[in-house]
Image (tube, rainbow, N blue to C red; front, side, top):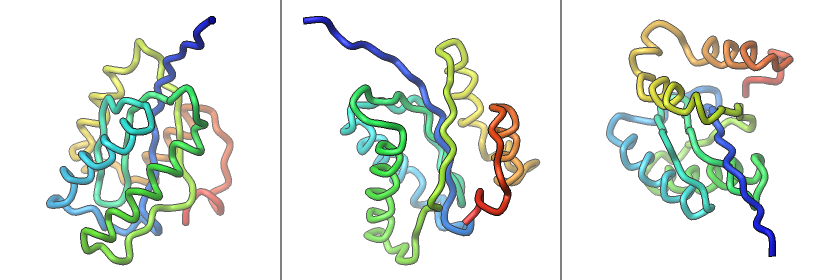
Length: 148
């Protein structure tokens, strides 16, 4: 029987609802571990992850058996419930997300970009960072529907 083989790298970005700064320094490492496990259980692999106070970057592989939307829904749903069990009762992720393809040759560059989020955001806020990604990937968008 022939095999179906794939390796699709995704850079996933989404924020908390209204970009509220719910993700503290204290909870960040635990959230990273939790999300890494969730994604692993979906037959994926996390190459890099960083949760800023109001948004997250995840570089992972797209499992062969689910869609991008299904992957992100499972990540958001489980982590939202988990955050509430950690005492962040009003925690919510935004409804939307950004998912950007990454070529194998650029994986290390994207990993470094994600690792340097704290220093990156000393110069650029999340909204402007996200707009740059949309422009770089030539994605048309309407400001009225990007943020919630």
